[in-house]
Image 1 (cartoon, rainbow, N blue to C red):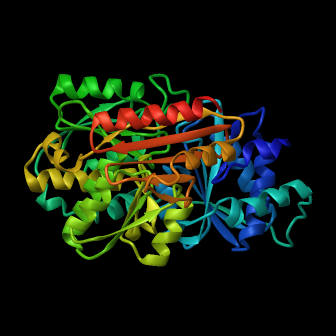
Image 2 (cartoon, one colour):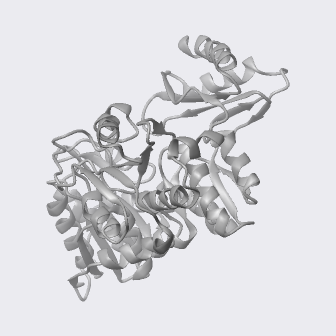
Image 3 (cartoon, rainbow, N blue to C red):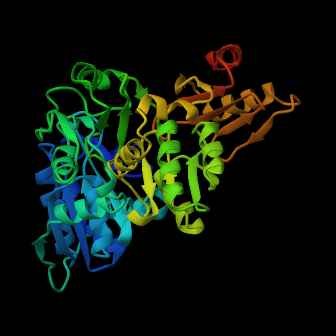
Length: 448
């Protein structure tokens, strides 16, 4: 495996600095991205990691050598970068490793208006250009200029709600020393909420806890804050602030599926009849809530490139994933944690109901959560599992891994993009049904 094979992932570039990803490689990728887009200019931003500034500087030098003008946004969240890509109608590159530890860094790419770039939509070509190792200078070198979209982005975010209808709430917010510490004050400073902040200082060494709120242990400080200060809700952002996770007034985490249903319900209340996309790991309750809210649910593969493409094809107003990514048509179909948070807060204000009550009608099933199995042959293991359910009346599809569905339970089994793992998600009408079928699947997979 080459060094580029290590850092070029399905949706981005990511690796340990400097062992796997350094300034020389960043320069080459900058040149290659400019060559691939052939747009003549791009926007570039970075997070607060200690390696982000030198890596971004090298990337910009590579891009300008190829002839592109670069609008350098400096420090920004990933959703700000997507907004800038739409505002300037230019491709974009964001230096971040999102929720990964401090020693990692990477690049998220997009085309103009935040259109996705993945392995099959540009990353493979960019990698091939770097592998060729030929980087001639342009006849005229590009120019780097500074850009600032923070205030414009805050205004854009606030347009998703009517601030005049909000009521005072106490909101605990943990930005994990990530880029939420830049964006949250600008947005929430204009709203009638009392903020209890946790770890707003930008610090890419993550001195308090990892910026990975999908892991329960990284929510504990926020849960304690909600309890001790009597917050109505807690918001936990990841390192680049494009994802958000909710804690209710009882300090209980809210799943990504439930948040997807909440946001969909809020948007459909203002725009009934619209389409809503959910990935195939989301709870069945999501599609049910969308229909009950006079919307049309559409099932999608997991991953931002698939959801963004399907949103473009269908005109869907919103797309949600179980992993905390929430996509908005009027945000260039890009994901934004802070927009999702505001839509939920708006619903809390309009209903006058605590989040612990607001969530209850949307949580109709029990779930296993994601369980990983190490396997030597993922393809063979999935087909062994499929054979186990042949002739049992199940609905089976291979849209994204293996999905097997019955009226009272279902599961999805997907291979990891980066590790020899199969990821299992199972949902059932009740705990006994879930436990029984989970035991069946564990028996088949543990022998693999």
